[in-house]
Image (tube, rainbow over all chains, first blue to last red; front, side):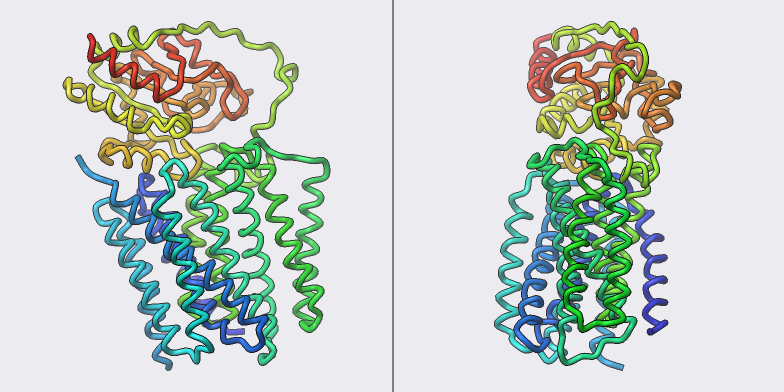
Length: 89
Length: 457
């Protein structure tokens, strides 16, 4: 087990808490859909896993690529659509 | 040091900067763009540095996913955002779980104890997020009853499943060649996603969606542990933290613990006999014409939107009324309770869609001292979040919940469709107050009629 990646994880949680508590309530829905798009980062793993030997692994990888892309593309697009609407007087 | 790792760190930095820019509506849109650039860098890096088996296959996957994603993103209505976010949480979860599953079936790799544990974790959280999100989606979309679904022994069942999942995970780590345990883990994770979500009622959905949001991050992070990939770990941690913070805010907004939301099944029909005597309240029901006269005399108006506004799609109608009143020199504000609507920030997005400037939208802490000198508070499809019983009646199920103090206004005009109780199943004593006036009807119809009457004055 690699202690380095745990360190990275824990530090990232702290950074996350720091920056997310500063997001005002009015932007909580875009925050959710935007962070949702970021969780589509699984696409990186999905692309890697399509090269896993045997059709089994490849198909799992392909399914994962599709789901993650829906998440990424849909998430960022809908967030942009919402944020476009927030206007000052 | 691999080049790809430098690019993954770069994309993580862009995610962090992107979220940081969400701290203000002015910079938020560019923040989203920055984060999407981070994603692009991560994807391109992976495509160019890994020894990719088939670009066609990946290309097909990305095209299919992008079309589906773009279709939903363009077509979804703002009132349906909670459903959309719920289902996308599920997709994120299942994507992570599938990657972990692919690693598990990978024949060319002997997995370490750590990998096997994180694979189990990723599959458990990812699958649970997937099925849980579908139930949440079904409830929000109305495919499944929004009422809590409970059955005897539910808690015991959940407990048994949880224990079995831990047992299976240990077993998988010890003997990774037994695929039956692996399949059983997937099945049980899917079941617990359902059994944990069905007992949660419609108005508690903001908590559930936030929690599932957090889970999708945790699933991504654990997949990052499996693959030893920093981009996944950092992004997953950010999303996990984001979901947890929102969950916490939502729970505070209802003065309830997370355990109470998940296991409390609040919103079930309660026995009327159990609570003792029914309190009789006398209400005054006015027409929109009479209400228009009260608005005409007012100088300061605060609008309190609730889920009923979203259901009636009345966000444009309310903005027209507010514009008319502003045009007459009256001050108009909107008071947004943290748990108004079906997800965090739901009302804000709806009102932004109707071109309400965001500086008119005030949250609970900002707005509560504004009611003292407010002439008219207009409550639209909100109920429990304005019930004064939360302040003083310790026998009320919503006692202690922070509420909007609309009753301190000169006049409170409440629009509802019927006299039905709110989500918590309690009659709102506010309706019987001397300064309260009810105007019944669909929010959109009522507001349009009100606007007409205001113009006719």
